[in-house]
Length: 74
Image (tube, rainbow, N blue to C red; front, side, top):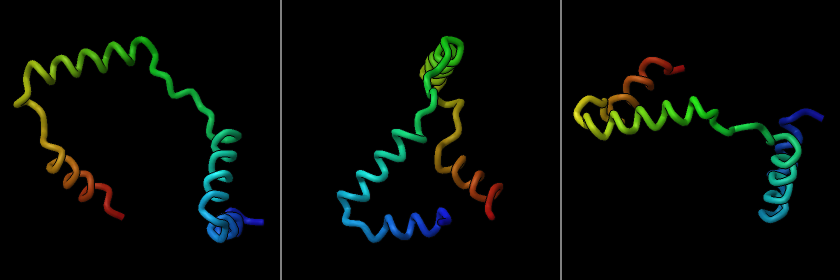
């Protein structure tokens, strides 16, 4: 059975059963280490502090979003 066929069968389930299936799939296959290393956490803290000290240096989200949509448009 293909992944598409499995997904189609899941879509036919009542909402609560779909939730149960999703939860079981996540428990079995979704477990990955998403913890930040101490170095990553320190870098994020440094960047956040810098952004707060220099609020005008950043690029607005709307501008970045538009740029990314143009760059990676499929």
